[in-house]
Every structure is written in C-alpha cells, then in structure tokens.
Length: 98
Image (tube, rainbow, N blue to C red):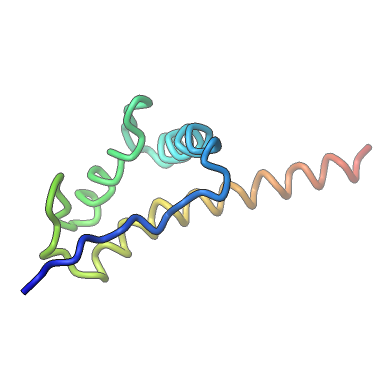
C-alpha cells in the first residue's frame, strides 16, 4: 500500500503576503488570549488544540479526525475572519464620516 503525502492547500495568491498574514494571525490570536511566539505564529494551533481538547501534536497526526482538525482550524480562521470584517467595517465607517 502506497501512502500519498498531503499537500498544503493553503496557498496564498500572493506568496509575498505570507509574513503579513502570519503577523496578522499572531495579533488576532493574542487578542483571543493565546500565547503566541511571533517567530512561530503557526505554533498557536497547538495551544488552541489543547484548549479544545484536541490531541494535536507536532509531526504525524494521521490519527486526528477531520472533525478535530476542523475545530482547530475553524477557531483560528474564524477569529481571523471576524477581525477582518471588523477592520473593514471600521474603515467603511471612517470613509462615510469624511
């Protein structure tokens, strides 16, 4: 049986934006109360997983259910989307006030 490697499907359309997105993720997750190492913002997923009771660990997580992986990613991505919407609404309100 041949095992297929998983490819990261989270590709940015503008690869140069990765550093900015990582900084944004770190800021948002810090606001959510998580300890974030700015040098390794992706590591916040382990803290989020722990808070949700999801057994995520570094390395192989082949035994992790899709549901559990989605809970971790959803908590992070959902927080980021909420913050993006808040920022957009704030900017629109500022434009209307000009």
